[in-house]
Image 1: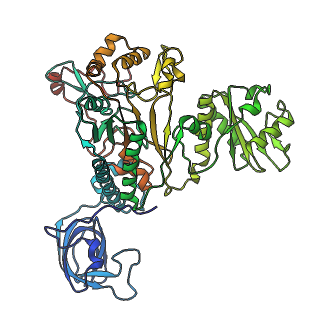
Image 2: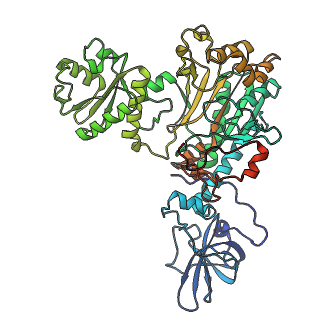
Image 3: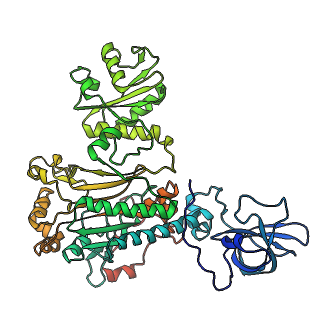
Length: 589
């Protein structure tokens, strides 16, 4: 994994004359004043102490000529002269490993109590402990690198947007509830008891209004909040680069975003990003079984629909049959586990064929009693399977068959992907709707403000699940980095889509009347995009979880061990807000 480029080392000021990272450029014999934290103390006899002093730019050995009462992680100031280490004592693992500081004064500016957790990068500490003492955890070199890399990304994104003529506008944090697919955090109003603001899931509506207002090109490094279950790539609070532009096509928007992404890669990796490609949603699902595929390893899906058409084999009779070739002879117990996993994903079962030798008929499968030998040979040939490989097959609808095998593909093959490799591409032509709710109303695949494909407008009322959208996702290394679309800008079309979603004119007016009204006053064609900065930085740094790029994240249960939040609030605080707690903590009712 390449080291992150944290940006420019600042000019020293105050109590220090130099940062430690600049010491290799300082001539020997020069006097310096350094500030930082004591990382290690090693006593050699009564009159010689070695102290490793650390700041965010590096660490250096300091030689103290007398015994001192020193505690690890105390804040200290050292003055002395730069000297060469004696031959044979150099440390090749440190940029400062060939020098040391001959100390004249060592001043403890902030003593330290015994540490509740080790701060070395190679020591594993549980999540709760790290977050309980996060201000100590953040002193670790890895975390310092991550935070500074994140700052460098933010700066690069701002420069990239400003050079493309975008203006930064801050949108409200206290907003109105909007249906964007996730639960919202609500804020009670003191001046209007019983009424609530919502914290924004995104600035979606606000930025569309800015387009109607004539801003033309808007961007913001926006804080967004969603009350969703947490996981490695999700927190309640997240930060995204949000943008919108008027009188543009989706190709224009994607070009703007690609430029910003390439600037972020340069800021962290120090080199150019690979070319950013493009595939359709249908191709992504057919080849990798995912709308955010990890393409850094092979194992592409194979369409067996034609091969199995009219086969009469019940287990492989469905509108779509997809297969996956695994480069090993999977054991029966492992195949049973995969079958159980496939069923948990919503399909009836998983067919498998283990190729035992180069003989096309030397195949093991519980389906051999119902599948003719020539059909087995045709299936193996279509898949290009060789001896020692296993074919997994699912028959169902196109989406269920491909997405099930896509999940199994990740579980079986993702370990082959190299974290330092970057694969960035656009996925386009998503369906406008992802399914039907319990009332039979279509569910937006992105949000209800997405422009349908012009060629599919006649399908909206009668075959909504066939309608394509003018939307586009950016995928990096198997993570959905962000989503965007061209927006509905006509009042009649937006009202039509609300009606298709099951929103009565009254409900649509209550929730979005201000937006529909704004469409009456010369709304321009416009489109935009937003991508998660937390995820982007995590990928560029090779981190598995976005909390490693956030200064003060929550645990996977939504707790903040450092502050104890969330906490109960005294009823006297809630009363002026018109709020009363009806269910006590710990209640199961």
